[in-house]
Image 1 (tube, rainbow over the protein chains, first blue to last red):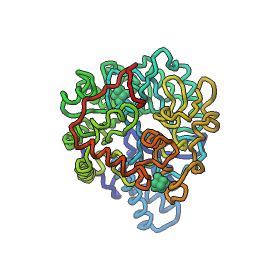
Image 2 (image 1 turned 45 degrees about the vertical axis):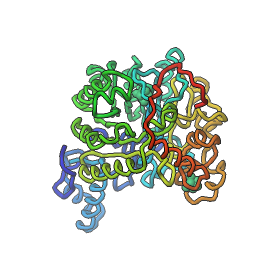
Image 3 (image 1 turned 180 degrees about the vertical axis):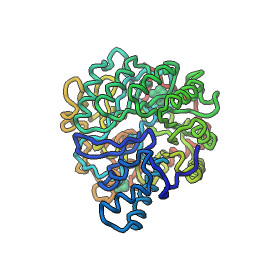
Image 4 (image 1 turned 135 degrees about the horizontal axis):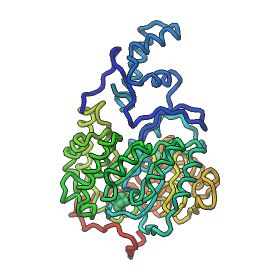
Length: 95
Length: 391
Ligand code: SF4
Ligand code: SF4
């Protein structure tokens, strides 16, 4: 067992193997699936979750989003880390 | 294993029931509960299966289950849970797992163990795309565990299976079925999950349906025991935050408000029983006024929309007082219909777990009194058992 997953800019997050990000064709909807859980992430969350592949670092994600939305890096950064930490505490994200 | 197929006991059942899932009411269901068989090598007295169990000869065949999964995926369902009885008694389980993968459904195997689930089968199912295994335990003490489940050697098979599941790289949930005869081992139970390398632990207090209701006095804890268990779980959650997810299901007898049973009647789940009847909840067969339809006669989509049993308690129109004018009616949907029927004799009544129910005091008092007396002998779950009383 490891300690609680703490997300910071250096983290390289990924979905644990029982959690799947899938596009449901019938519903035209992204969903995060775990045995007893189901999450319908909003557009931004989907973008972030798609990058949780165990290769991209949090700081990398922030750079891309800050550029894409032309928004201040510190504000985007705070949001991204908060979102990932929330997902990590629920077991949807590991590092 | 069938003591707490999660969607039926979603006290903490989770994001399927809260604001993170903006799924609208008459939308398609989210998950299919496939009760592949009622056969089981275990005889758990807390089993929530109906007292009248279906024989092997009447079970749906492989092709029928595959068609049911095709239809589920077409409706937009996300998940299939293979349960029972003991689903590993089905020789075609591998085939069904493979088919689930083809349809894109997230597959979860809900098992109690036994000798038929060996390492080779687990490896094979992992290859075929099985995505998660949920394994129940009865205690950490082998002797007591085997006594509870009525299966000598059963506990050992579970320990082996837990290891093989992890070796196969499959994610594992340990389901700790808790009650007055093992609740004092809860701390060790939690450690067992950690030692097994489980990703998730479900501490599920027995829910009183089917066989469990017959055995309630043998299982029900006192409110004090329950409080202690809750404190233990909360401390462990804090300690293990981010490393082991712990879901906690309490018997709602001691709650003020009922659980959001099945995420609301006919709102999120379809349960198909071993012979192909579609049920809004796995315990629904106890309610005499319901008419069930079979997947042999209709498509899942037709049943979801038209079956009398699904429409009977869907939404809020059917609700009597106090639910009808209550501002929680779209939060808990009036609680559990099967429990309302079993305990009050009327399925449309407010679930007596709610303290606004006129029956609440009486039932709570009865249960609490049972918990103080010495536990009676178990009535083990067996095919073809006969009872004098209607339960
Ligand atoms: S007897 Fe036990 S293992 Fe078998 S279905 Fe019932 S609860 Fe599950
Ligand atoms: S009265 Fe009905 S709707 Fe209100 S809290 Fe109780 S069970 Fe829920």
